[in-house]
Length: 478
Image (cartoon, rainbow, N blue to C red; front, top):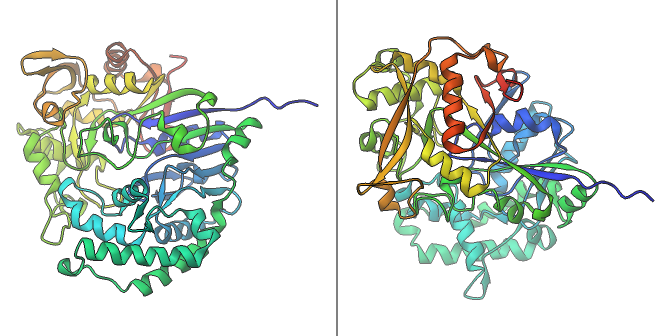
């Protein structure tokens, strides 16, 4: 009897503050794998894929959905909003994409309950959450029980004993309504109607729940190749990021195995994704931000109802060509945001933008043991030639309280005091969107990539020069 050769797992994570184009990279890489798996986050993790004339804004389904032969697995480290999932799967199926038999959610993944979103609306504004209830869902996972009532309710629990756990969800709402004074905030809901809607959605998506808790391990032992897809990004890690301006789950590469339901012995390598012009959603330190505090306040401004004051529609009236050459960094940042469509997939909120920070990138590479990186949105670097300086600035030095450091400070206030030091690379005017070979990229862009490798001690695997699959350029034969 021949024993099958075991497969392996690779991990892809964002190395910055999110929106690096992980979905784009996953889509490029997916053909070489059998299973694409998520291990953290929930419906707060918007990501967009484009191929074959289809553009999908995904929130809970893995990015390789456009590959009909790939299994899509969502691990126990995630929390699931089943009503939103029904809407998402309906949209996907509306494009003729088959999900039955290939989309699988771990039965141990947590359920986002009605009270979680209301709590998030009450307490999440200070740190700029998406108000999707993700943090409260993870909090209830840690609390486990409250006054003899189970708070950590999982997909498999509801599938196994729906009446028992739907009643528990209702009781959890009543407890939270009293504790957080929903009525005082005008946020009470008809919980019976909500439970009915939740059950309807659950019944529509329950076919995707995988009850075999060894599913992924069995597949890998039989030879399957697995690609783990990280949601959010490393600098938003609940432990390693700038607390409290972080997400609610671990986003580091090691979490792929605890949250993705596979032993780490199958790990082969880690790929990091970095964006040539960085962005960040939410409050928190951002050393290279164009416009600094002014930019942060602008992007995070909300009205009395907690809705972002500025969004992609507001900035459609602006002329990026007029702003890009401004002497004011804030206006230059607006131009880069417009050119790069840097707006939240979930909220539409403008993302804060900044220059590429190689100290931060080197830190992310070291902590996660990243083997190679993909640099995305290199086509955006073209616009630097139209700035007042004309060069591309890169952060290569951190100064904290007068001393140079080579790491990201563990204290949030300290990180806010970091002063960046820059090196520059000459701007270029060549449109790189149609370039197919690495050697045909502008020499100044090749020099920039060489500087990244030198400063971070990590190889660049390839670069993307646009959103389409054909606009990825591998570097291996350069």
